[in-house]
Length: 174
Image (cartoon, rainbow, N blue to C red; front, side, top):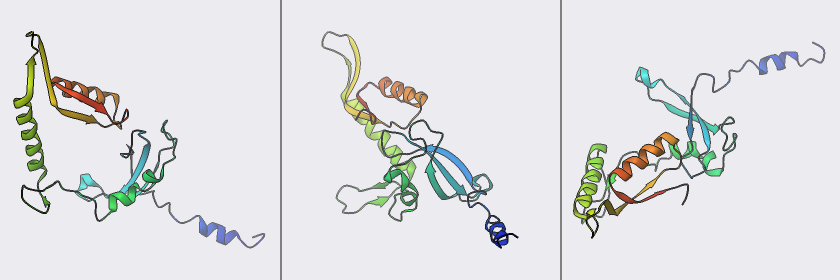
């Protein structure tokens, strides 16, 4: 017992590590083009029908970009996820309305697909003035995310170019 602190020291380390029973998920911070690595800790087994609850977010020390550090925006990610004002459903303001209403994801994606198809049908340029095939769609642009893998970026590029979209940029460059 030497100095009389042995019992207190023994009791202090008994408490379980608060993240020991959580699921660890590695991801990329969504805020900017730096694409910092983050580790998210959640409780709840989604496969068992439970709702996963985000408990903690920290920088990924093994990530080559940020080596565990996060800027103030990245450090506040958990607050963003749990914010009561965060939108979790698509919303639409119909013509003449003064408010937004929630719509289903299916309706939102159908409306986006319809608008793209209508614009492409009306503005697609198949050939130039000399009759050379150009397959251009100049009235729609696409801004890709920078926090993706090389494979995702390649597929995005191929998809956008295959539709004929000329205006194509990436958040990392902007």
